[in-house]
Length: 277
Image 1 (tube, rainbow, N blue to C red):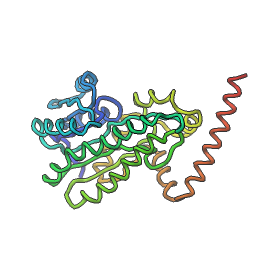
Image 2 (image 1 turned 45 degrees about the horizontal axis):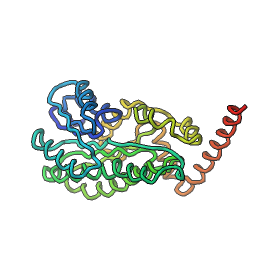
Image 3 (image 1 turned 90 degrees about the vertical axis):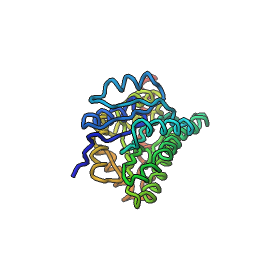
Image 4 (image 1 turned 30 degrees about the horizontal axis):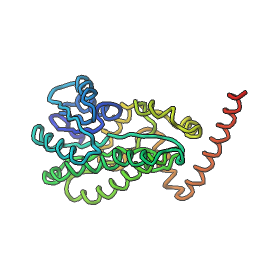
């Protein structure tokens, strides 16, 4: 039986835009109270105004700041209660060739994507364990289980989210708190529009072979997966076949990726030659 969200408290980081905001709107439509978390207050206020229903609150917070997250969690639990769902959707990316990316980018992506997820879980999971129920939903990426050309910094941080969540799932299983990890493909969000000009030519060509989902589609499949008790949630067709192929081929996946990257390089050279002429 599908879980009734009426009156439940759903906390969503990265809730001011993209997948996080799409999730917030859907659960709010079902009567959930939403706690929106993001860095910028003005964006949170805009997001809050777009939510149906009542009882929603915003909590400006940088999830990369562990102390700020602890303060935010105390405020949320004091004013709204212990969340029934904690969704870690806050994330950033920066594509580029490894040798051209500043080392600061690797640190920044780990701080937000990985440590941000850890900080929020540390702040809320103990109370959820004490209650004996709840859902922790961590958003990774297809690039979090498959090394994607041009995403050394991003893939590293999202693979870390996968490893963390795998272990968290095992530890929380006896407590009544359910854990879920979501691997979305390219999704039509402000983040994707930001990164498009930064992608290496090979990465852009590889992306052409994959599908593009809307934030709403990812949000719908995420909610459906949580309700069905799925640990691994793969929105859309492409993540599903990529997951199956990568597990079926094992180390053969590297051979396949090398072929696809070599093809992308050939296409990139031809396009570059045409533009030059």
